[in-house]
View 1 (cartoon, one colour):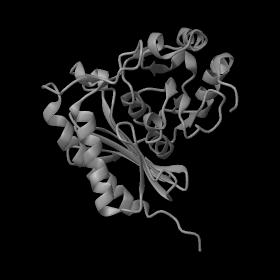
View 2 (spheres, one colour):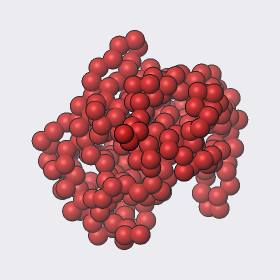
View 3 (tube, rainbow, N blue to C red):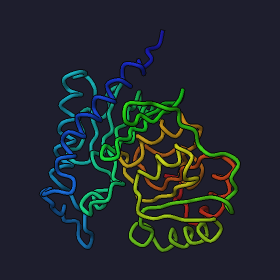
View 4 (spheres, rainbow, N blue to C red):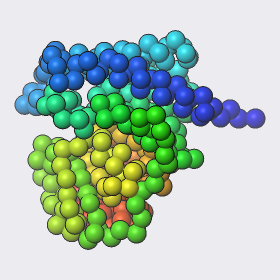
Amino acid sequence: MARSPDLEALDALLVELNRASAAAILPLFRAEHGLEDKGRPGFFDPVTEADRGAEAAIRALVAERHPDHGVIGEEYGEDRPDAEFVWVIDPIDGTRAFIAGLPVWTTLIGMRFRGEPVLGSIGQPYLGELFIGHAGGARLISRGSSRPLATRKGVPLSGAIIATTDPEACFSPQELDAWRRLRAGARLARLGCDAYAYAMVAAGALDLVVEAGLKAWDIEAAIPVLAGAGGVVTDWRGEAVAGAGGQVALAGDSALLAEALYLLAPAASPRP
């Protein structure tokens, strides 16, 4: 019989990993956090002690519990990325929000099984929120209670609340044109929420998020959360998101996604 992941046990570990990362991050939020610039030419790419400390804490706990598992993280790179089980980590998604004192940064922790994302979490420990899910369901754990997550259905683009992080900085000229078409057709657009916007789609507050230039750790944790809440995640061509990230669209409803993809199509990256 083919092996299948023990999602119940891994779910429990995922909660622990979020606690470990929160313990490293929260003392440094709105405090001295050792800000550095990674130094990409022409681009401010910040990293803090909190980013590094949280990823180190997650890696240490994974190594203790499952030394055969692989890890891919933003701050410390790859360790056995071809393992059967691989954790994909962004310790602080939204470091710019973190250093600005805005509580919309999140910790993203995803689990790949044989190359496919099967379990993930979006954690915002300052607000006491952990969005966690897999294809069988998603839930919000907050302040000692838990409730199911469900995306909003039946909303056309004309009635939708949409989001992206920073279109001027993150989109190419062609992608920016596509975003402007999308925004013109939507009811309301919000900017600057990073991966917290993904959680809001899962919770039924936002309807659609589009991003570009993502890395694997920016998106993989969200894919199982959205799937469990009834949402859908694709690239701008409507295909499964590649392991490298790239252009991504997340929606609570497949019909809304189809409307968005029609407008995004002129800027969609060609097939690899």
